[in-house]
Amino acid sequence: MNFDEKIREDRESLIEDIKRLVSINSVEAEPKEGMPFGKGPAEALLCFLSMAEEMGFQTENFDNYAGHVDFGESGEVLGILGHMDVVPCGDGWICDPFCPEVIDGKLYGRGVLDNKGPMAVCLHALKILKDMGVPLKKKVRLIVGANEETDWKCMDYYFHTKKVAPPQISFTPDAEFPLKHAEKGVFQYQLVTDIKEEIVLAGGNAYNSVAEYAYVLLPKELKAQAEAGIPGWTEYTGCRYETCMENGRLKLEAFGFAAHAANPAKGTNAVTGIMKAVSDLKPGNDLGNIAEFYMEKIGRNLYGEKLGVALEDEVSGRLSFNVGKAEVLDGKFILSIDNRVPVTYKCQEARKCVEKGLEGTRFRFENPQITESIYVPKDSFLVETLMDVYKEVTKDMDAMPQVDGACSYARALDNCVAFGAILPGQPDLMHQKNEYLELDRLDMWMKIYLEAIYRLAR
Ligand SMILES: [Zn+2]
Image 1: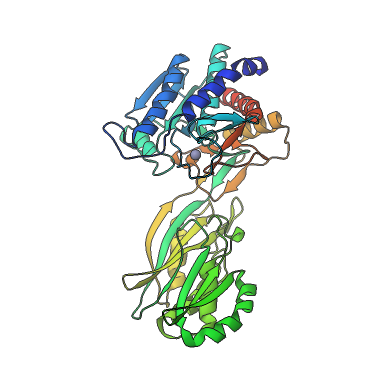
Image 2 (image 1 turned 120 degrees about the horizontal axis):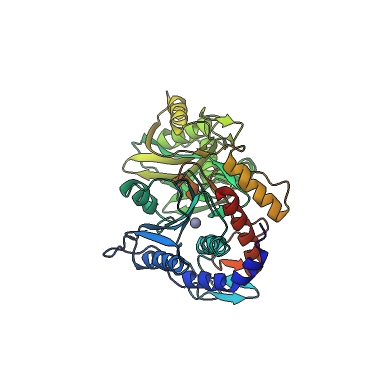
């Protein structure tokens, strides 16, 4: 279909609608009567649904948790999943993040990419299809959440409390192009051991990030040995080290580099840096013993080889292994681990491997949190159609569906893939300061989503 003229005609009103949505500060706040995530997310959801109503679509609001917009009557449903809440802004913006402004052809504002802009494009795509009277066989349903950035309570309420039937096929424009057809399982847990002596060691702050800093306090007698060891440790772990004295003890600090847990090879783990140093310094007792365990069962492994959890498959590659945090708490020493599990394995299988790997050591397995993988085959109607559209519109004929360790909104549903909206070469400013949308990308977005909706639903 040739939509070019309609896209041109609609452009200004699309930009106005993105600005309207972005003007609402929809960061999660204290719940209020009838507003489970605070005033902002409810207002933004309402604004989106009112726009759809003004265009003549049927909408429904599910108690300000989530809402949907329907186009078409028939039973089979194509879902498009997105959200109206945004992450906090932080400092350093060149304009007010909730007063969207065009500067040098770029529209600045929190949410222009994540996810208000792409959802406004999909809504306007439906409007164009409706205005042109294009006949579709499927019903198209925009499903709009108000709590994606924190707890996904929106989708839980919509699908489980309200029991709305899930669409047969869906995509979410809440990641990057071209398309993610497989997302690894997210498997987080703790390795825990009881300690009898005082240990002062800490590093990292979250499961899903490579620990960028760690430190340990050691007996002052180890100072000369530590300083002599630093060049070798830096070579081995990639960390930078510093020493100083603190209350009569030696403080050894390791500085690594943060990265997302799904790609630990992009970072440098400071906990590993400290453990390597401690295992060489051999301070004895609990601390020395823990460092020995660490180097024997984890070490520099990024795929869990030493612990025996190095699962791998053809579709999604290797399991990733990240130590996100090390801490001492209530007489226990705790390592917080994040694994991204290949899509053809269940997280429970990884768990068995970890438990077996711990046999005969002082550490035990605790506090598992599991988000299972999603996988839509490359040769499915959904993936093939979306990839065809993407290639034809962008002329990027080598594009391939991708596998990701990160967790997109697609996981809220079966048979859903992440499709856009960040284009190759477009800066990924989702969750960053100065989030902006280059307005000359808008036509490309619109062409892709219009054609995609048309071909999936016709
Ligand atoms: Zn998002």
